[in-house]
Length: 128
Image (cartoon, rainbow, N blue to C red; front, side):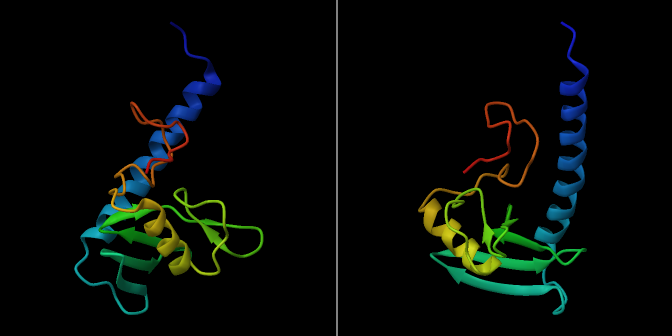
């Protein structure tokens, strides 16, 4: 079967983004204690460990129990996550707390921050 060029390029791009993003997030998740200027928040909330770091370009990198949670900036200046994307939150910490409340006792998937196609998962990378 011949794969259309657009689908092949999209898959290649998704794989490259996942490899580079996943490696960076793994290094950040494995770091014992980040420098103070990179640490935005580090707290327990709802029985989960929330850690927010400042990424290379100043964007937030959020970990819930050591697993990455993707945050998106809204047009109104607020933040949403794939778990709770109906209400804009004023800060990355508030969006992370809303995601934890939306998750309940369910664990955050290790594919939650991925943007590529995952076997048996959503092609948009939204996995709770």
